[in-house]
Image 1 (cartoon, one colour):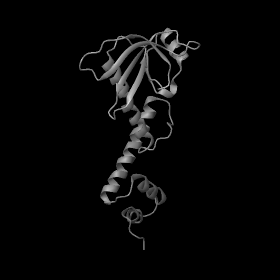
Image 2 (cartoon, helix red, strand yellow; image 1 turned 30 degrees about the vertical axis):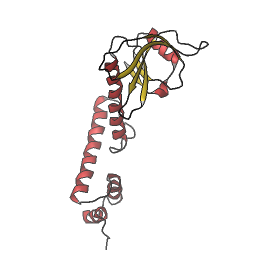
Image 3 (cartoon, one colour; image 1 turned 90 degrees about the horizontal axis):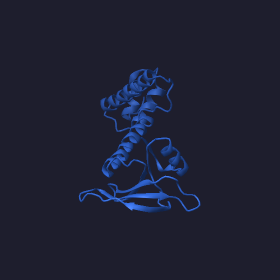
Image 4 (cartoon, one colour; image 1 turned 30 degrees about the horizontal axis):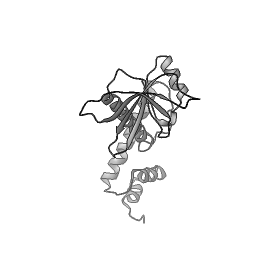
Length: 183
């Protein structure tokens, strides 16, 4: 099952994916033109606002397949419309699948920012695992240096100081990290 961001919204692609037997879940744009065909009954205690069978698009450019439109309330009170071709899962399960996507998104954001991995140098599973493990070790060492020096500086600043004074005596970069002037 492909879980897509609304930036990948392409109705023809959704029709092709459905015809080829692939499942998808995506957020729907608020300005999407939909025609409701059927409203599914929801359980009394459901967190889902609505569950509908619908066609999407205008009369000139409409999807060939029927899709499922779910409307869910997020933790901030915003209404999120989801489109999917999965009819075998409950509305709550589909909602949970999309929430899981955000956990994955945050994990990759963390890899790019604190671990500072901008690209992978190898293609194999081992190469990628090794690069992530090495980056994680470096991150942990930066945090340990920050804790040891009782510094309030950010990890990125500490990283810059360590790079700049890499081959200099430790007391030089420790003083910089601690914020003390170097005599």
